[in-house]
Length: 400
Ligand code: ACO
Image 1: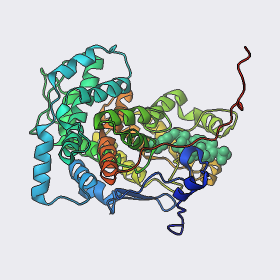
Image 2: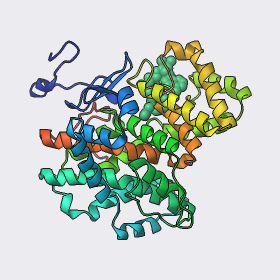
Image 3: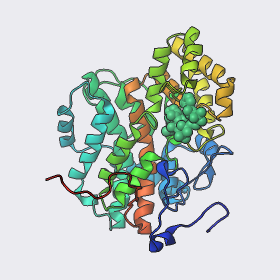
Image 4: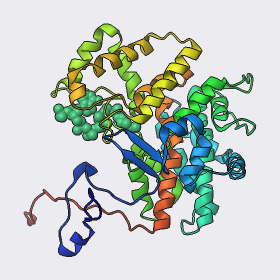
């Protein structure tokens, strides 16, 4: 035992024993100094700082610096970091030809898996994982290039010309510029939307050993290069039980259609013979309110109020939330709206199409993934190699 709640089972290997924990419900795969979560109390800290304070008083690039380096930057360090990120916002021109290999109606996450993985074919000067400088530069490249790649994927899907990054804009303004402006029409970016976007990025920046981060660590433990590891994280994030949930929330609202159908869908969610789940509700770790959801709900109210948006789908979401929160089934199981319930609504209000929601999650989470990858490489962690409980045939001979 190494703490009141932690049993160190590493010595079991020498006795031929191992633990069986499908879904890693009670297995810590590593030590980490990056993010702390107390799911019962609804606490989320990055390097010790509460997420609520970061969302209110910091900005995304400062939060990136904090996650990557362990401390908040001084004014000088921040200016230097922002400038370095801006130096790397463009992607290699040849990377554009990768897009042409995809159908325009491909899911943007399918293209993201391919294009981000392909970065390792371009940036050979940052692939030596044993060189700390290479690790730094690949981390900065990923943070800098993700908005450019995400916007490229969107523009490709709608057949518009790709927009180059603008380094006179902030990280979030630049992303919205590349998403929504065209060479024919450059409109100023709304500060309210840029602020909301930045907050969404901060709230998704890291969340300790979730499925995608664990995937990045597992891939990285083999010595794979950082771009390949992040592509693996993107693939893991895509599923509807993880990052795909924000897209699934909007699809579900479409399916529900009208407030008069809410009760029918709640009954489906409660029926154990029906695979339907209320998307955007529940969390593996938070068995109290997700602290990110609280901030996201507040941002959601601000954005909708500021934009004066009157959207029946958004009214439906609010009604669904209200009815579910008062339903004993959800209360007994501690099922609250998670961060994805509100992020989907804000992204829709900003004008981001549903199919891009998970891409935006991937963009924001890249800094968390790469911070964990760097921490793992620096700690010299062994290759990740889970055991299994074999339930197949005993040895038998071929019948010939
Ligand atoms: N709707 C209806 N019932 C639910 C829901 C839901 N969204 N989530 C959990 N439950 C029920 C389960 O059926 C189970 O009921 P039971 O005890 O009667 O069998 C109970 O609540 C416990 O749920 P588990 O599935 O054991 O919880 P787990 O920790 O394995 O799953 C998960 C968590 C995957 C997030 C789940 O709640 C879910 O699928 N939610 C919808 C998808 C979603 O919003 N995912 C986003 C997660 S946040 C993120 O990735 C950023």
